[in-house]
Amino acid sequence: MEPQPISDELSPRELIGRETVYEGRIWNVVHDTVQLSDDGSRIERDYIVHPGAVSILALDERERVLLVNQYRHPVGMRLWELPAGLLDVAGEPPLEGAKRELWEEADRTAESWAVLTDVFLSPGSSSEALRIFLARDVNLAPEGQRHERTDEEAEIITRWVPLDEAVAAVLDGRIHNPSAVVGLLAAFAARASNYSTLRPADSAFDAHPGLRGA
Image (cartoon, rainbow, N blue to C red; front, side, top):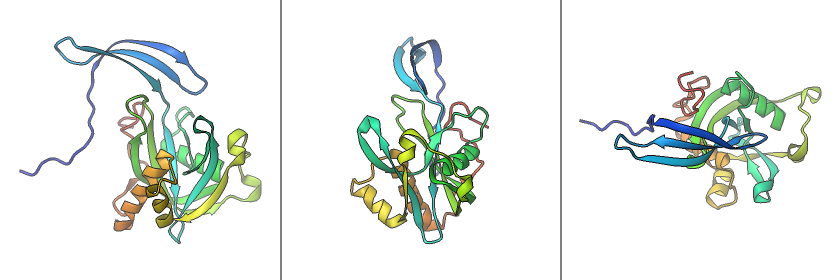
């Protein structure tokens, strides 16, 4: 008998108690007490409760990927990244959030969308689930229909980079942003099948605690 394909799976545990230990502007930190097993073992964990996020790997007809460069204060560096943002608009589907973020960060729209991959960015310390989309048939928004960026986003610059060149930068340690690293390597792998094995853009986002089965 062939083994089942490997897949992460839900593993419900009884939540004994939860306390919010820090309330932040964007996310909170909670302290959970969890029944780990039937023999009475319990664990206590502090972690970030995150609304989730989307990221967009926009690819043009020349197999170039759209990268954005912006300052990230916690690491004190300007990073090359994919356009991305939080799922912090109530009721907004992930695909619509991705379209909004591509417009807000890169002044672009796209006609063709697919799910590139889903990932937990730091599952030992955060509930953040990230969906990375592949966007194709990309267009620049007209001058009068572009988003007015502020704060760090006001310094964003964009560049079209050949996919192979961007992947080489990842492997050479010159690109560090996790969604960019995962998205670029996933696109490089998906290209072997001409992106034909990717999931539809509106596929259920089961990695996200608030969207499972949606």
